[in-house]
Length: 270
Image 1 (cartoon, helix red, strand yellow):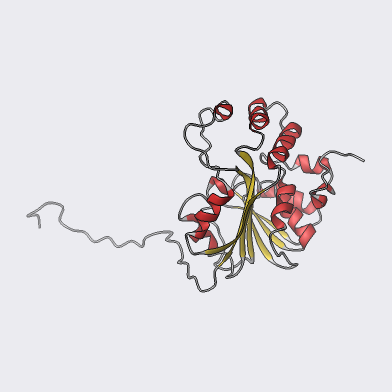
Image 2 (image 1 turned 90 degrees about the vertical axis):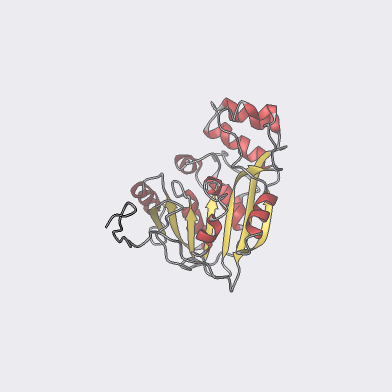
């Protein structure tokens, strides 16, 4: 048996062929393990409609469909939905995973269409915006969860960046990464979600490091940073909040109707 990517901590993810997992890499994390970890904090039931936001090559979407029987809208801006559809069909879940190309800030879905929203290792690209949660939460039914899991910090980082991380972050500071407690405050203060979970993965830095040793062994800067940091700052975090019943979220303003009326340009002009 091929023992790569086997972990007692993640029995569901470990049952997938490593060649299939590696062929579906679309980011810097093992999407199946993060999805399994996040799902442990969700109450997913067969038939639920789930938005998988920033789904990459749809590995997480396929996993959710196969393991929990949910219907998944695999939504991503960068990856070809036609390629993802072929991957979905080959995985035998074409009846329940629907690849969509869309920007996270311009989603083509009706309000309260989804029973749950998940995002695996991508939410920090757009979700730190103070206004974004109000936009996203309108898509999930009252009481439904919004859950994220991905790279993050064990504690917030002050300026300057610690010396052992500077080479990796040269030219791009890591201010978009945040701790679990930061996400709890960021979501909780809006009044939109009841935050149920905000935590970090035990030894998440080792998971991060082991994954990069497999998929990007030549990425010396990131591997070196993780080895030097040893979980002081870097690791995986997750957060889950449920949309509060009774909270009304306004539809976003997509455009302003034209209302031009010609007026004299200069004083004294007719």
